[in-house]
Image (cartoon, rainbow, N blue to C red; front, side, top):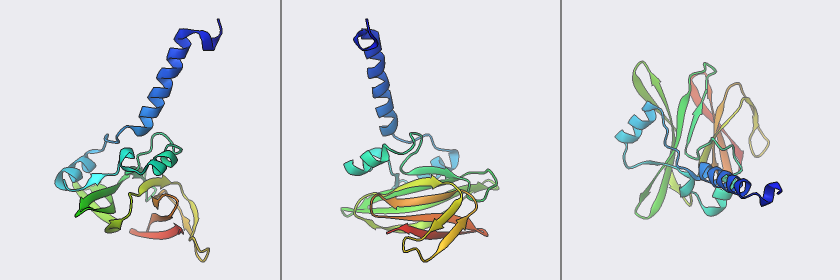
Length: 178
């Protein structure tokens, strides 16, 4: 009996395929306490989930590392090893999608919120993801930025992307695609 004609092997492969598919599509909800507290205090906002994305964007997102969430990422913006929690949040208002990106950090027992992309109408939901240190060039090629630590990318898939980074305690950005 070969591997592919063995019923146990077929069952194992089917189980693994199902597990991998559900791992990508599973809701991202294992948040640190500051995120849970923020969401509780702001109940009209929801974290972008895989199921909220357009079908085309879901197919693209499946190509990202499996541990990534389209609306949540933890980023070491300042190289200290302490993670900031980044959230892509949305709400529906009068039939329109409104989205914003916030970065949270617990400092001295308080949650500090930094809005890095202000709430605005979007035709469909965008995603966020963590980028490593390195050089970033704006999409027109006019400016290059050296980013010494991790950064956050906010992307409307196949349309545009902004890369947010921390410089001397302030959030900056560069548009990396347009």
